[in-house]
Length: 429
Image 1 (cartoon, rainbow, N blue to C red):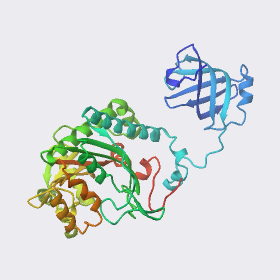
Image 2 (image 1 turned 120 degrees about the horizontal axis):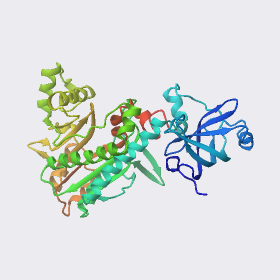
Image 3 (image 1 turned 180 degrees about the horizontal axis):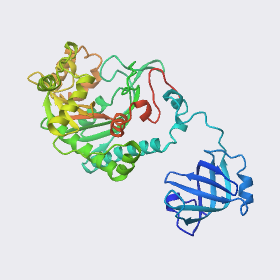
C-alpha cells in the first residue's frame, strides 16, 4: 500500500500514513497520538483493549518519533483537526526520538544550535514554504518575460566590487575569493547577447556585523536586462516582479500567514512612489524633525529608512517607495551618471532597504574613468574587458530573499528567518 499524505486520505478507505508524533496522550482506555506530516495533522485513536499489539509496540515511544500506521479514517464531531480520526490496524516504528534538548522557551542561540529541531514548528515550516512561494512567483514572472536563468561562479579571482568585505580562500597555489555578488557576471551575460537574465544563488559578505538584518551568507535574487531607456525601466520591472511574488504568496498562504504570524499580505499598487534623496531629506525634517547626520549625507541610514517608510505610508498609503539621486561617492563605480548623479535607486519596504538598482554604465571609456576615480582599475581589469567589444545599455538590481521573507512575515531578525544562519560568530550547524 502506497503512503498517503494526511490531507489526502478519504473516509472509510484503507490507508497508510506516516509522520511525526507531535503529541502522545495515554489515558486509561485509549492512546491518542496527533500525527503530523507536510500536508497536515490527524488524531490517531488507539483502543488499548482492541489493539494490544499496537500498544506494546508503542511502549516507551516519545514525542517526535516517526511512526507509520495502516488503517482507516473516520469522521467524528468530537475530534479536532477537521473532525478526522484515524483508526489504526497496525503500526511500524520508523525512528525513535529521544527527549528534545530544547522547548519553545529556548533562546535564539540554543535554537540555532539545534536548528533542525527548531524548524519543525508550524511557523517555521510555513516560513520556508512562503519563501519558496515568493521566489517561485518571481521566477515564473521572469520566465514569462523571456528572462534566462544563469548560474555564475562563486569562486572568483578578484573581489566583486571592492577589495574589502570579501572572504579569501586558498585556491591551489593562489588566492581566490567568495563572490559578494554576481554583478560582473550578470553584465558579462548582457555583453554575451543574453538580453534578459536572472540568478538565484548564494552571496558572501565578510562584514563583521551583528545587526538583525545582516549575515555573512545569504540568497540573492539578481536580474539584469538590456535595451533600457533609463533606470525608470528598472524600477518598473521591480514593481512587476514584487507584485508577482507577493500575489503568489497571498494566493497560496495568505490565510495561514495571518493565523500564525498575524501579518496581512498586501499587494501593492503601481506605480510605487518615487522621491529624490534631497527632497526626502526635506520631507523627513519637516514632518518628523529628522536631520540626516553629516557622515550620511548623500545616502541613507537605518533611521532614515524607517522614517521613509512612515512617509510613504502617511503621504501615499504605500508600503513601498523608491529613493533616487544618491551621491556618486555612495554608489558603485558601474552606475551610469547623468549630470554627475548616479542613475540608480534604493527601494524601501517596511522600514528597510531591500534593493539597490541602477542603469549601468555600458560605455567602456566612461566606465574605465569611473573605476579610476574609485581606484579600482587594476582590480576590475577583467570586468572592463566585457565592454570593449560592444555592449547594449542595460540595468538591473538584486534582492535579498531572506530579508524579503523576514519583512513579509514580521520576523525580528535573519537569525530566526534563515534556514541556516551564518554570522561572525556562527559557522554551525
